[in-house]
Length: 130
Image (cartoon, rainbow, N blue to C red):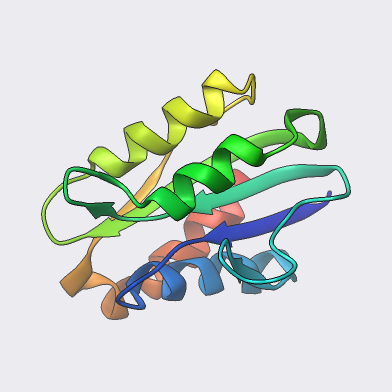
């Protein structure tokens, strides 16, 4: 099974979760604003995450999702961290579904303060959904 992990993180919390997923999958977690983030080969599972910024997801993440070639994605798993709201999960999933990408119903979310103490939970989630 081929896996890719993409994320956008400003505080580092979403990056930590992405790196936990990537460890389980044996791949690198790549920020959507870095070179090499574009998915050029088909992947069975794409883990994709970001946080809520000013009641929406960051424009960089929106643009990344808009640019995904849906034919290269088998399914997507959405994750997020934030201080207050899980709403980024819905916004990311909506953008993916609008592209015709299957989105797994189970998502992963942590409040920002809880990230460091829940990395093992992120790894267990990745094992379960893979």
